[in-house]
Structure formats: structure tokens, C-alpha cells
Image 1 (tube, rainbow, N blue to C red):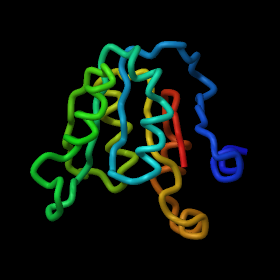
Image 2 (cartoon, rainbow, N blue to C red):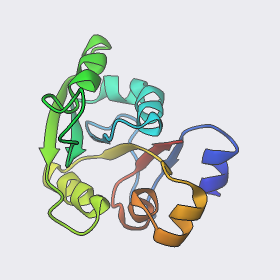
Image 3 (cartoon, helix red, strand yellow):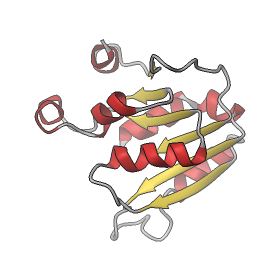
Image 4 (spheres, rainbow, N blue to C red):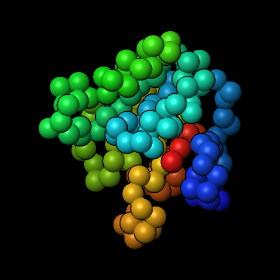
Length: 150
């Protein structure tokens, strides 16, 4: 159902784990940022929630060593969000665990965040089905609501 809504409905989706009661205004939000179009769509769609949050952490895991944003990973997104009145912090993390989703979930726990915002299914459905991916792993292990957009 989630994949159908994301791919066919072309609308963002908020996935809430069974053990969690979501809040209308999360106070601490983590953005999983990888500079993809999907991640940008998720950020834009979640802007009303981000504006009401007390703290928004832009999390970049193993940023590219080459390219225009190598010296300031997440900086352009942080500037975009600041123009909309969102208070942000940039957290650059190393991939110290086997999967990106593991690192992101651990950081969410460390920050005691209320919600994750991230792009969904940046790879083809076939590749996600065979090899898995950050989206599927997050849906399986997240302990807080996950706001997704494709």
C-alpha cells in the first residue's frame, strides 16, 4: 500500500509504527539528506511540519568527497530551510554500521527525535526488491513516524 501511494499516488506518505502515537507538531525532526530529488520532494512536502518544529537536524551520511557541495554538505538545504523560518543543524555522520538506515535510526535515538523526513525509493523498484535499500530498511525498523516522498 505504501509503495502504491508513493509511486502511483504521487503524494507524500506518513508511516507510523504500531507502537507510536504521532503528534501533530513534532518538536525534533531528522531529515535524511542525500541530495536526491526524492529527498528534496520530502522536505518541500513536510515544510509546514518543519516550520513548527523546535529543532530540525539535516543528517548527511558519508557525503561525496568530490562535487560542488563537498565543503558544505547540507549547506544549501539548510539555507533553503532558514529562508522559510526553519531552525536547522547539520549533522555529518560516517557510515559506521553496515546500512545507512542503521546509522540514521541510531542518530534518531540519540537525538530523541519525533519524526524522520526522507526521500523514498531513489533506486528502481527492481533493485529495491532484490537488494533492499534505505527506504525498505527504514520502514522495517523505524521507531518514530517516517515522512516519505518519491
